[in-house]
Image (tube, rainbow, N blue to C red; front, side, top):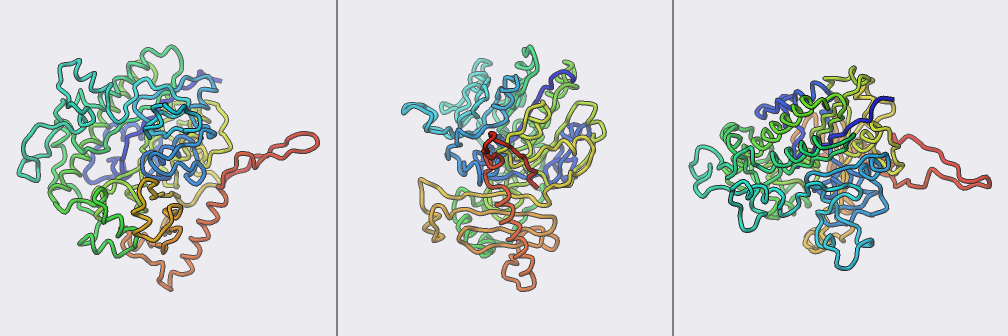
Length: 508
């Protein structure tokens, strides 16, 4: 057995899966991530299992589908009985540390009445040690800025979008207005620097989670990244002529488009400015990942560090007249994944681009197997090691991607009133295959798309008689998937006269 492996687990919040130059995006340039992919494996059909941040990260960190961990909204507690990769790594001798945030809503049953985590959904993942915790108000970063002579807003939550007064692109400026702070002092540079400082001081193998906010809003990039992409030349938007045209697709979409927080602006120049800044933030993150990789190489840690780069979810950025992440469209769920295993047995996989469907529930099993830890029964995903080692797609393996969206709001029943649902009926499940995509609502009509003929997901074929056999087939696929992944913590154990026996089974 070789030396213990280091793990650097990086998430960049709200990064669409098509936004890598290694995947031939027409505009976005990500040379450092492209280089990482060339030395590792790029997964081109990787999907989040839920949105928004809290539910998605609950799946990412526990390896469980939403139907099992049940932390369905930002603020829904994550049941303390579930383990996670940090707890498992700690039990294997590591000290898992955090730079950034995990958006883990704490289980109130284990907290005292006055515990401050009862008032925030942004708690740290149980089992992880926050070295630099960046939640809500980014105090570690703004304190660092002030110590270097920069002014910060009185309400430091606004530091992320702090800009000089004056016109923006839609008002006649040549480029989107930049962040007030130089690039080397932005929040991405700060967190990467903190991570580098920690690794320098680590006396043994480390497991570090670097959770970057960007390219999450506010869409404000520092110079020169604010002007790297011309808003006039960014790709257009995948949408029908008007929001009203989009709304006719489904009652849920009509309701979502009626909500100001999710409705994209009608101002084309402003929306293009947001997209250009979104891309600029991606290139900014890419540059800092390049700095981190150079440090690992220069410090002699490159060949002993497993690197995982992914996101929690995507971003609509104007597609279907939506902004943010929600619903069933691929733009909200398709995300990047690059994994570089430094060990010699992964040499055969280097530079591969994998087209099989992979999901965020696969990250925890991959990480734990790499460090020699057992994969808990609760995990709904599977290790990606065969892909990393050049062995190709395992048999069995999933043939579709799956995700869920829980759009209930325990503090507001507007969705229920608008759609005639109970709180528990505010849910949808999606199965997305190579060609077809099926969306099942608990108590609303389904959707079915032929992605080969309709890659923009505009034409609902659920009621088209010629597609009826396929709709039935995908409804059955979805039911079978849910049945196969029902929570299984103790189901592989049987008590007998000679004591408990266990039998583990493959998921797929």
